[in-house]
Structures are given as C-alpha cells and as structure tokens.
Length: 163
Image 1 (cartoon, rainbow, N blue to C red):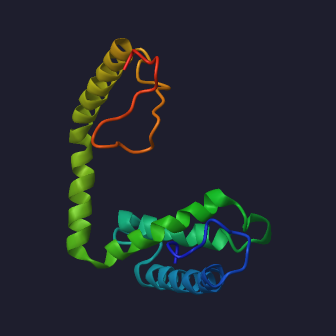
Image 2: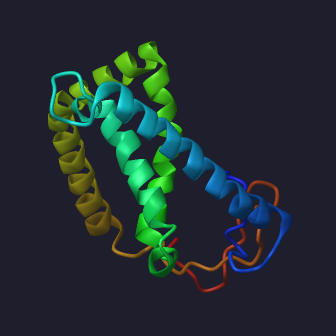
C-alpha cells in the first residue's frame, strides 16, 4: 500500500491515493485486533512471558499505537507519526522464526562492524581531501559542444586548455 501511493500528487484524488486512503482503516483495525488478542493471551508486561517482554512485539505495539494516533483528528496530518507506517512490513518477521533468527544475527553483528564503519569513513575522508587537493576544481564547469561523445572523442571548447 505504501508503494502505490502517488507522492507527486498527495492532495489530489486518484484511484491509487483513494485506495490507500480507504485501505488504511482496515490495516489499523486488523493490527489493533491482533495486538489486543496477543495482550489478552499473553498478558501485557508484568509476568515473564508477556506481550511486551518480547522485543519483536515492541515493534508491533509501536506500529499499532502510532497508527491509532493518526486517527485522532488533530494529529492525522503529522508526518512524523505517519512515518511509522513504514515499519508495518517488518511485522511479517514476527511470524517467520527463521527470519527472526536471521535479523537477530544481523543486529548482533552490527556492533562488531562498527570498527569497519569507522575505518571506511576515515578512508573516504582521506580520499576526499586528496581529491579536492589534487583537482582543485579543474574538472568543474568544463563545457562541451556535444551532449554525447561523437566517435568516442569529446569536442573541446576552443580556448579551453586545462582539460
């Protein structure tokens, strides 16, 4: 549903935008009923195996609460709250145990990858300084007479001796 929304004309009525607008309450209702049933079945937070003791249910709960907040009349147009709709596809991970294992493994390995990220940022920073120092704008604002190469060669603007 998020993919078919027409973001070029968000305020105009079109088939795609109307479909998303009318499907939104259905998804809110379905996710809310699912969360309520899970809370009734497991309990909310106090015991050991309750609903909010599972980190995957935190995502479900945040999606449901933010979806319900969009139904409040004065908060319906708050784009920050509507952004949480992007987490809805992630809810499908809760029903696939192998996918949960895979995502948990990736999340636990992110801490170990932080050193590689820092090293990569340092390398990019060094090469960006090197590029600025070596070229100093030589390739900036160089005009060509043709839009595409002709015969594999670019025609150079007369009088342009730098490139």
